[in-house]
Each structure stands twice: as C-alpha cells, then as structure tokens.
Length: 315
Length: 315
Image 1 (spheres, rainbow over the protein chains, first blue to last red):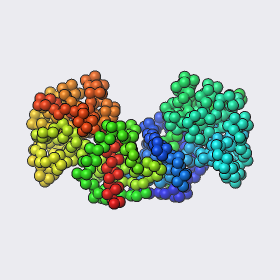
Image 2 (image 1 turned 90 degrees about the horizontal axis):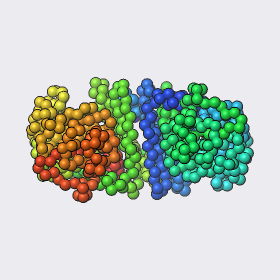
Image 3 (image 1 turned 180 degrees about the vertical axis):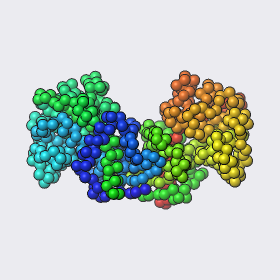
Image 4 (image 1 turned 30 degrees about the horizontal axis):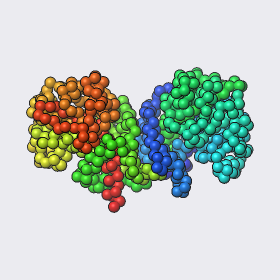
C-alpha cells in the first residue's frame, strides 16, 4: 500500500489540471456514470466536530476512493488545524487497498475551492463584478485565490466575525495581488458586491434576503450537513436559477434542503452543475435575476483528484 | 499515523478478550451508546464485488473507527483472497487520523465469527447438539472453530457446493479436533442437525422451511446486502424468536429484510442481541421452537476490537 503525505500531494497537484478534472467529475456525476452512495456523516458534541465520508467510483476506472474529512472546531485552541482527513484508494477490480493519501484535508479543500470556481463561473460568465467573501477561513481564502488565479484579477470585499482574522485575511489576500477591502456587516457587503460567496460553518442564516440586490449571484459553500445554514430561505424564492453539485445531497442536507422543506423550490427545479456544463439545463442570468449555487461536495471530485495525484506521483 | 500490518494485528488479537469485547459492543449498540451511521455499500459488477464501510464511535471513547471490508468473488482465480479490508482509527477529540490497521479483513472475519458465537450461544444455552455448517469459506471455518474453542467440543456436519472444497474443509476441521462429517444436501443437513449456521454469499434461499425440524436454531451469517439471502422467508413465520445484531440494519438489508417486507414478522418483534444479553427481551427456546439469529455486522464491534488491538500493541 503506497503512502503519500501532504507535501507529496501538494507537489503533485496542478491547479489547472485539477480544475478540468473537477469539471469532468461534475459531468460524470450528472450523467450517472459514478457510483456514489449517500454521504456518511458523524457528529461529535464534546468537543464539537464532524466527520464526512464520501465514497465514489467513476465507472470504468480501475480504482475507487474513500474520502474522510473531519472538522473539529476547537482544534485551533489546541494549536491544531480545524480540518483534517485522508483518502484511501482501492482497486475496483480486486478490492485491494492501493494507496493512503494523508492529505490532511488538502484534496477536499482544493476540490471545494475549484467547485466554487466552476459554479461561480457558470452563473457569472460575463465577469464577477465585486466579489464579497463571507468568512475568513480556508474556503474564504481558496474561493477568492482560485477565482483570481484561474479567472483573472478580482476585486473583493470580506466580512468576518473576528476583526483580527479579517485583518490577517486582508493582508494575506493583498499579498497575492488581490484588491480587497472589508465590510462592517453582511448587509454592507451585500450592498457593495455582485458575487457573494459564503464560507462559514454557520447554523443560522447569515444573508438576509432583503439585503441582496437584484442581479446578485451567491455561491454557498458552508452548509454541508443538516443544521448548517448560511442563506435566508427566502432567497430561493427570489432566485431565477439554482445550481447544485448534487440534487440528492443538496436536498438532503445543504442550503436547498431548507428551501425544499419550506416548499419554496422543488427538487426538479434545481440544476446540477454537471447538467449546466453540458449546456442543456441552465441559462445564464439576465440582469435583474438572482442566482444561487449550493455546494455540498462530490465524492466524485475527491476520487478524480486522488487518481490524478497518484498517477502524477507514479508516472 | 501508526501503521499495523495483518501479522501484528493477529499477534495482538486475544480470542477470549475479543469475545468479551464483541459482547460489550452489542450491549453498547442496543443501549444507543454508539454513534453508527447507516452502512455504506458499493456494488461492483465487472468483476463482481462489493465494499462495505462501517463507522462507529462508542460514546465516551477517545477514538472512532472507519472499517472497510471488500469482497471480490473472482479474486481466487487471480490467486488473491476474496476478502480484503482495513480500518482507519481517528481521534474523536480532534479528528486526527491515528492509525491504519491493514488487517486485510482479519478483524471483520474475527468479529463476525465471534458475533456468531454470541448469537448461537444465546439461542442454545443448553448445548448446540449437532452443528450443521452450510458453506466452506472463511466464516464456515471460523463459526465452527470458535464454537469449538470457546464453548467446548462440538459435533458437526458440513454441506458445500464444491466437493473438493468440502474435502478440504473436513480435513482442516478434523485437524483442529472437531468431529465432523459431510451431508449430500442441505435437506439432509437440516434433518441431521440441531444448530444450523449459514455462511454463504447466496442470492436465493438455500434452506427450505419444510426441511427444518422443530427445535432447530439457525444462525444466518451470509446476507449482508440487499439481494443476498440464505433462508426461506417462511422460516420467520415458524420462528418463536428472532435475534438480530441490529434491528435497523437487518430490516434494511439482511435476512429479516425479506420477512419484514413480506409482512411475516414486524421489526419490533426482532430482539437485538444487546437486548438479549441484558436478559430483558429474550426467552430461551423451549423444545419445539425454531429460533433464528440474523447477523449483519456491527461497526461497533469493529471499533471495539480495533481499539483493543491498538492498546495491546502500544502497551
């Protein structure tokens, strides 16, 4: 069984190739060419944490992948990162374990960042305008960095709960060449921005529908389990189009979950990103529309990146 | 991250301690003191195989475990064992991966064998009589060996599809001191035996209800996924008592699944082994009754053994 550590994985990760791979994973998933059982979710209460396990086999590929991603929110007070994880790669022909990717969450972080780029680009094909980031954690960073690196220079605003974290975020993003300022409230951020990206582990809506201007797009990253929520459900009532990575997962436990439960949107009205990439189901938002992209994370994206990284290391 | 191979794990496994641990895992599970999300199941068609992932956290314990068990049925023709697997042990306090147990299925095999001993002993407190084994694979071996080693000498019969496999099985079991003969059919085995243990990956009932004598007990090991079945559903209609390791899992995808779907037994009539061990819900079968034990495999048993093995290695 081959062991790869985070450093080897980081070295083998090429962002452009990974973007193409993540897009491909969306297409395969929506074409039902992926075996992907329901996500396994464990919650821990003391100390608070959660574990997501995502498994995927891309049909015809010789491997399948089991991805474990943990978030333990008190870890920073112990001097540990809040995220951790690993990926086990196994033969789809014999079941033999082939490799352990001790990525400590790097592949999950990367594919989530890239999934955001794919979704936000689909909804905003003519440019992002001012990009507003809610949160200051790892996805707050990667969403903005990847948009900037892969889609050209962005102008941005950030809002976060902790003033020192916002200061650090501003300094780090500016060091990467991003033009960015901060907002004093989510309301102010919504007023100033055209594209809003929510990246928090919030358990109640942070973005009030009344604050969001017509013509805005929102990509929601944070809600990945029952009980997490970043968006006012009313936003779904105003949205002309809602993109989801997985209709099944988002209706089960991401933002769309609340809107479907409230009867504001029907599951069949949600458009999977893989369908939108095929150009059949998604029309780009005319001015005046609100669009939402709701991401829950695909095991297919983990599997495709794990396979690419293994191939790169072993070539 | 600590790595243990199969040899180290085998050395650290003490059968008597493991039996106590498996019993404890049943009690904790039925007392709802285990977080155990639904089993993840992947099926592969070409070549045929399946992957079960079981996750469990025993409340209050500092670790949780993710157990992967694969069965690929064409492997023997490639010179590989059909079973494989591993267990990842992680901190329940920080989410940090702690250990990889490359047990190649040893822990799953062992806890399944021991779960059979626990179930069969509950149903047969006054002795097993003649034990009939259906199948000649790993569980056909472990069920009988463990009963013999842990509960005293047994007299046995075996039936298997393949005559050479039956010959090999007889030789191996006799070498362990077990008095055993073979039967020419399942019907003959049912006529001669008091305790029947089914251990095959069959996808249709092997044991016809009309063949089973009053007073018999049957422990069913093989059916661990939708589509697998060893027992005639009618047996559930005759049974005075049905033991299950997990009501939820067995109703979802083990033998009881078919009986519940057919309306022959109600979920609340099934008695969990953990409840029976507490002595509250199970009365031992008087002569004349048929009893059934239906096993689907508990992640809690994997977790408790993984933790014990890690502790033994690190003491």
